[in-house]
Length: 467
Ligand SMILES: Cc1ncc(COP(=O)(O)O)c(C=O)c1O
Image 1 (cartoon, rainbow, N blue to C red):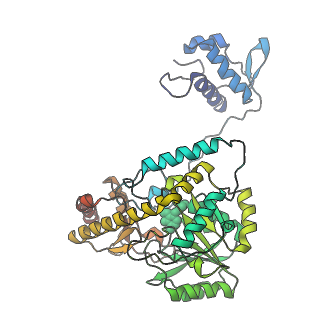
Image 2: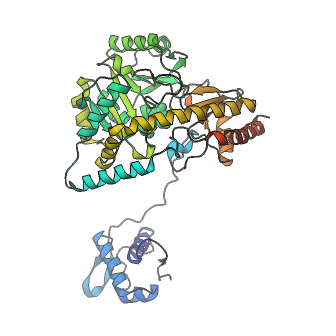
Image 3: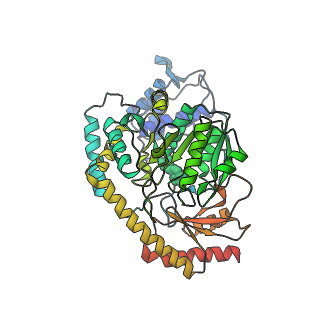
């Protein structure tokens, strides 16, 4: 059914009829089809036009009056309020220039080779839903309280305990802040460090989203090359001697996978101390290290200049949006102010569920299981790549397939996507002009038995593009 001024209702929709009518009228007002002062049809008339009950129209009008779109005027009926601006056409959405894998921009379910997501088939669904249910019931008992913006005290203590054992990082719970993943942690700490306008060393290649984030925070990202020992500190000093901050992934470099050598760690710490500079450690994979024992956190070597960021995105699930910051004592008070104002910890329900997962050994058991499965998946993909005649290098939880220089890896990744595979192009991880071309293949969601078939499909896409 359609009304005189063009509103439609859909009886199969999830939205109530009254809500649909109100929305239709709001749109008609915004688009100018119902000008200011125009009289709306009576409840009876519109109800008859649309074939709904009179009470339904009345509810819609009441909703519109509450929102100040219309003014009920007694016997004179209901009129469109004056001063409701008709909208201009929506501007074209700003298109992201990034051709980086779409997984971080959301909206994709895990396809084979997707990087940055844990294995869907290893997730302990039953345990997690029990913990989440319990956490929700606990939180329901205190609905009116503002939670602590630094995070739930229990979880902060659990994280401090875990870091001491697994990452060699001794800290007190007061130094731990629970955040909305790595992204929330980075955003909060950049507000605290007050380094706007300064140069920032970033690994080259390195996590593209961190480069964007630092740019937004008013820093000038400087691409510092990495080699087998991690970020080349001497090159950083030559490129940007006055940088105020360095952002590094010392545990497992993103995306190449090597651990930062002891020599480089010491050089970086010395650089930071010499100029009262900051090091932000992105420990995004934590102890999820497949080839050897995880190197200790850089923050474990220095209590003053290193800000440590961890996330449960890779070890539990990215959808929970829980990560953490561990900061030197000197930053505890200013960070408390920032998170209290703008970046509070995520929902206590989620935090309590994570705390439950960290307790009773669930987390460590899950990590052990993932490590075993990922190592075996990685080996199966490597063997299949070799069999398909493709070169590859190990990197974190992914493998990198280098491509001939000049190959458009972003176009290739899109072509692979059309074949239901989700490798990530390597070139967007470079901020400077010299980019290497390649594809990063996440190993987490490719069971061994399927590796040969999926690699063969990918190899066909690569052969099709590179001849
Ligand atoms: C280098 C790096 N850091 C951090 C993250 C995780 O971020 P978050 O905790 O916001 O999900 C990712 C995810 O892919 C990453 O690749």
